[in-house]
Image 1 (cartoon, one colour):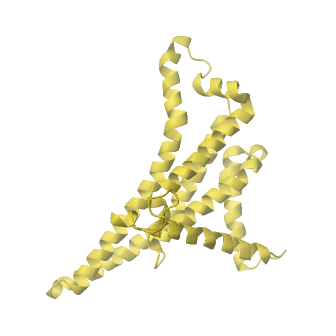
Image 2 (cartoon, helix red, strand yellow):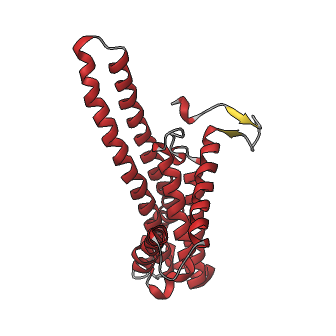
Image 3 (cartoon, helix red, strand yellow):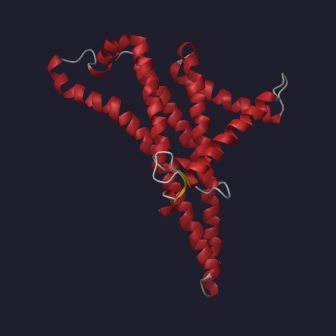
Length: 247
């Protein structure tokens, strides 16, 4: 667990404290920006392989998330944010299986919480833009078709569900999945190391099984990195859509 709380590299004890996880985050962000910058600067009418892969990724977010959930008419203003969110989360997740980095940036609460805050601002703004402040609060907290005495129970539930649980569950889901995945990989690789170099006799052979499991979970963690990016972005689009629609 100490890997999630590394010593400071610079600015110790201040709000600008910089540690190993901060460094990994910067590496992930720089790699993401550099990759898309390189592809965009060499964009051609007939795309090459790198451009094709980038366009497939961009189209996936635009079509399969934004337009699928929000509809073509309402999706366009939110495509840049959802695209940035998807690729940022994926790159920050996948650092957990990159040799030399070996820590998922989203396994510590700060960035997942920041991303959830961005999603919160986006869906609240979408609701206000669609209905106005009073209209949004009315449609969110006082659903139509409900006998007014039930609002005493229903409205507090809607407040907690809409304005607290949505960003909270976005944060915890992303962080917990990446935290659990990292601990799983560490467990199997440490066990493999022990069996290969410290265990006695035939027990060493069991290390082949744990190494195979570690490799399999590494591939699985790549899938989970993409899946969590998809789920977070999809739920953000769903919340935006719910805010735009009246109950």
